[in-house]
Figure 1 (cartoon, rainbow, N blue to C red):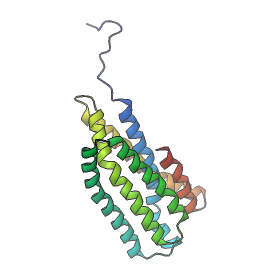
Figure 2: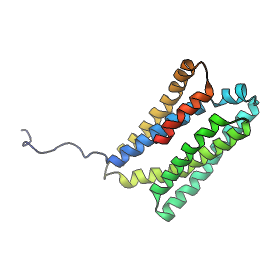
Figure 3: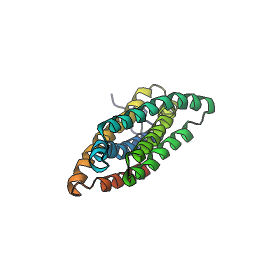
Length: 187
């Protein structure tokens, strides 16, 4: 027995806003990972930093993001302004990108990395809560899965794009950092 013409038996679809959040995650991850994949080489070869500085920058950056996530989740619940916090966090990430390209010393990279990771911490919990708020009943797993899948594609594509651009530019690492900026701004 077939369904009458004009009836839609398809499962409910995820709202456009969830797709938009996924695409924003994709673009920001492409931008971030284009830079992060090359950052240790940039620090050591271009800026003359030691491996200890590379470890310090990574450790402080990721530790900062983890700490900020706790507070941004609390703030998101308290204020109920999930979208505003997520947008602010993504803006911080995008605004940090030019500093990497302009950095004359490792201290600048540390500052940019911390600012970028504060942005990641600010956006993470409110964005995830927003996905939960927007997901249709019974589709929260699909909503979270879609957003995370697009994020992962960006995390995979960013370093690949960085490799291609390094080869095409004759290993001009600062140029590759600049080319990461449009992805961050588009996010």
